[in-house]
Length: 301
Image 1: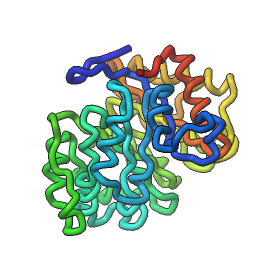
Image 2 (image 1 turned 60 degrees about the vertical axis):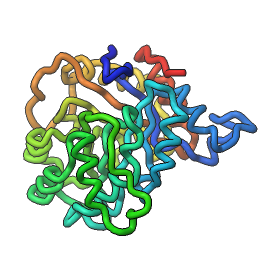
Image 3 (image 1 turned 90 degrees about the vertical axis):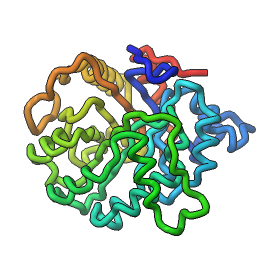
Image 4 (image 1 turned 180 degrees about the vertical axis):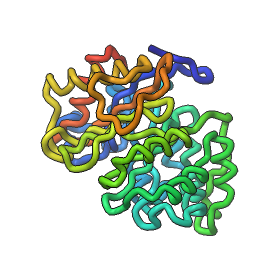
């Protein structure tokens, strides 16, 4: 299940981890003596994608994105997490300049390795259709549009902005929600109208689980089956997720999917991204590799 994008090969299904710099992983997942500067290189040879989490906490620099692209295999993809300043502090209101700053911070320097952009809402932000629609309208849908928006950055980025793209590519966005008011069919229809992907989040029962397909991709975040950010996924759980992923990738809806609305329009295939965020007890990379093995995925070199 592969498709061609530019001159690179991109797998329809990708599994990975949320972030890669975790001290407890050293000497467990990362070999003893491996320099920290080589941890991304090591992880990217064992996984097919990684979420960049540092971008959530602060604006990164272009040289970091350039380095991350250089350290990973040719067919590798990153997802990039949008800044909490936009989602948690501004709560999506009046965020044109902050979103411009985000794209000017170097995101486009990933080139063909730039995958979906993840926007994670806080648990205290409920469903406000008009605010969401305005935010969705702001989001650029191509790298060219993102580069244009990036030129609207504020003065803080005057000496470090990256406002160009090496090619015009589609740019996809996904939304993770954590408030029960989003359990509303109108929310699903709003995502579909704006072609925003729903994040399927498994969070030990803490937050809503919504499995409606709302765009041409499915994006899954596995935060821990029984204990948030900590518990692993046993063989039965991984088998269940593997089956769901196969069905989503083939354009269908898994049996028993927890949907709020009607099924999505049938598709020949969909891209599926699965990230393990159960990092506290070093489960994430091993669970990701175990799921990849079930799906027959082979990382690049």
